[in-house]
Length: 124
Length: 486
Picture 1 (cartoon, rainbow over the protein chains, first blue to last red):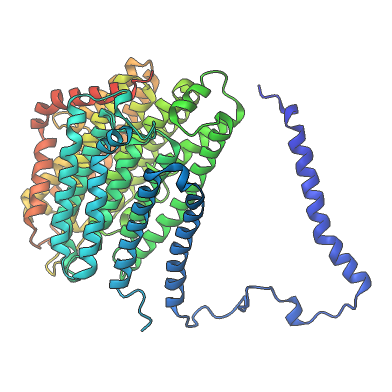
Picture 2: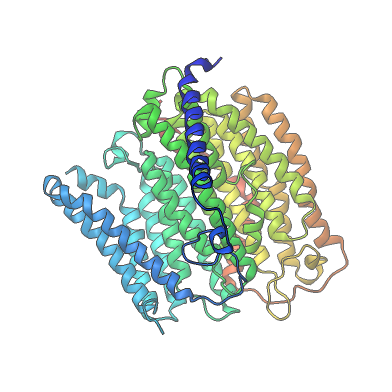
């Protein structure tokens, strides 16, 4: 059978984590209540949601093109993230690393050409 | 030098990826080249099948088949699965143009996505490292999510795609969590290394890793209790895509599961065997009971595929070379039966040329479309495992392997549950032959549909028994290659 006593450190860790996170939530609330002026209004109590109103009629219009551009941006942003670790080691790894990355970039270019020709980059 | 031999081993995958990229560019330049791209994609898949065939015929196995320092194995087992995958992908390409003609011509993205999905599956079945496994799985899944929602104007198709995506992402997460646990406790991502590290006592962390990995894979093969997406996705996706989902990805995921279970977790057979046995029995029972109340043929066939996965897993549960061989034979027969029955559903059109897929719509089909009704009846009897038909052989070898491996109780319960399954298969036949004709199905069918239905019906008829020796021989070689490390 499993010896549960060896998991004691994890249990202690969880208890400490729970205690600390509870402290982080309630301590500022308590301090604010005791020291500051307490006069809440609708703006202060509303959830912060990246600048958008959190609750509204879902049938409002939004431009789906923003999302398309955002997704295309993320693809090429990730490509750059792959290029950094490659760039610092390419001279140690030699030609196979160089060719491998060129193949990767070639595949991405094909995808880019496809999205260009499909009109995903045209705003109108 | 080593790089060259590695590249030679992945030649089929290189062909598929180059073809996919080239066809994507053709698709970008000419918007109405759908038919041409479909034909070229089928040719590329055919070429890839020819390239993998020698490895299967020669029974390739061992270190010579390993590419990229043990990341990828092009052995006979992978080749067997790849040929099944490529052939079913070709069939799904052949039936598609006629289906999409109704809403304008077929879009060229369909064959391109099929190619990328097939490439992902080829990588999956060859994976001998958890990293390769994950890359193949995701390449396949991402293409599949798009394919499921391919008919953008259809609500059900969009729903199917979204459901598949959300649940698929969840399953990927579970799988990755399992892989990270296995990596953490064994210190390696390679199957060989994991096997060596697990040869002693199984630690708690390894056990959890093993369970999570199997849970993630169970989702991909739609085994109970991770089957809930199957009926909705199969019903909502366009029928050619459903045909694809029921055949190729299933082969790939089952082959992958077999490799992970017998290779990476091969030293801990007792640990995963109970999970596989549970999933097998639960799939058989839920698949059989769930199908009874269905009035939509695609949903009914979705439950039928869940039911069949249970029988396939019985072969895996045996864990022997005979069991793996039986599993592969069953897979090949299952692919033919699925292709046949979904293509038959695809051929059901009303006078306006629209697809019909309700059970009530095929009432009295035998008097209006006798040949189609006969083919569908052969498929149904074969799926039920009624003896003169070839479907019986698949069930027979699987149960035989289970009995040989001392899993008599499993085989007995499986046989009993397949009787429940027979109820709804025979109900379809009864509706076609003994009910008042509904007169709904009157539309014409394409030659490609008739060709695939004819070939699969001939293979499932008693003529199929001529294939048993060849099929059994190839499956034996593939199983031997899989168990080579042992």
